[in-house]
Image (cartoon, rainbow, N blue to C red):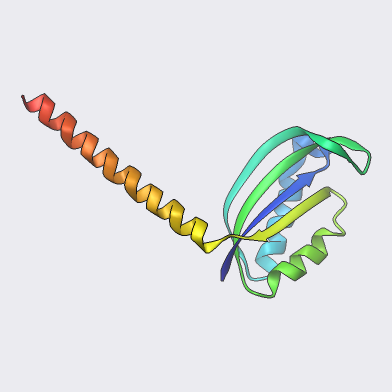
Length: 124
């Protein structure tokens, strides 16, 4: 399965009940054989331009592992969901994932070095 990022804008009137809409989207991903790996509610923000007469929207971000045929099915379904104003579903670049993994390794190595240095200074 390939990694994808899904960002969608929820109607601002549903700001307090985003769980229902997010649940629909997650069920859609699960029904198509995918698995949500990360989710972030970025909150209500002003839009750069009005979409369907709305000046604000609740931004939501998901990362998911999806099989090859799932993105087309998910896009088709999201086109008809009234609560979702807009969405963007893109494949994650493998180079980006590798770079993030390397950065995490470097941070862990630096943290170990700092801990070792602090330990030495405490012994002295």
